[in-house]
Image (cartoon, one colour):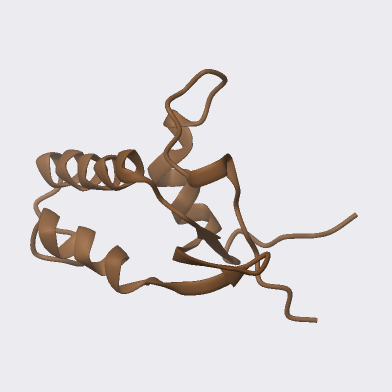
Length: 99
């Protein structure tokens, strides 16, 4: 059995719908709270874009976005159900093996 901490980094290849969900998350958040770590929705979305970088996955270069696992679950959890529109390419999460 493998133990994974909720603070571990998870890497995903978001599709267009995934980026739309990130934007919606921050629009909803800013409609309730007047403050986040960033000034507005665009700053918040751009923060995630800065955490997107090319990585080699199974011999192919992919643009992967890094999240802490708890952050990923918070943003996308309500959209992860059987039959939901996909927001991650291949429905795959990746963890870097540091061993």
